[in-house]
Length: 279
Image (cartoon, rainbow, N blue to C red; front, side, top):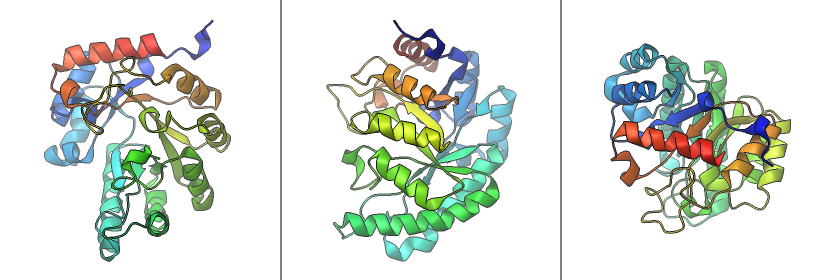
């Protein structure tokens, strides 16, 4: 029988703003509040479109809690010559997160360096950039939530693809670093349960994103499913996270052109139902 103690509480469901990508930050905040959602994870482009002060006000006016912020990193994207610029950009993202009152910022380190196929070189460069950026995050009081991504995103988004590797980086980096565990990216990993347990022991389970992996997909980036639409055992992952000590928000992060084009009220209703039925 399901463990009722580990059933997801509706009040712990937050929505990552990419899920309603067609909406402005103000529109998203109003739609979430109207649907009874209490947590929001803003994206930087949406915040900058209205300004940090206006974004903070819109979130407060709708009684929402900022559960996280997206995104920092991508250190490798423009090559080694852009190191300073990429670190400065990450620092600015951290500052925005702090201004919004976000406890953390999701961090993707970037893929291969331009004109290079060396994973080792990309990982070494990204780690050094992350370590330097982390000093700023510590001073700002914002945890950098390192996110391992599915291997299909290794060329362009992240050369960290396994939770074990993310845990190892956290061990080396020390204070101020946590983990963003996204079920979409890690569900396939045979060492997932061990990785979650290890992260829990070190109190680094900072962020938990959910969506579903559809058997038939139209896009590897923009066709994720609502919980229950795909093959991920979200309940098992949620239970593992809970048993490892995670008690934070469950953020629904659905990259989907199909879903984000729908009326927000209907989409959110389906999301809540999917979460509660699945988890």
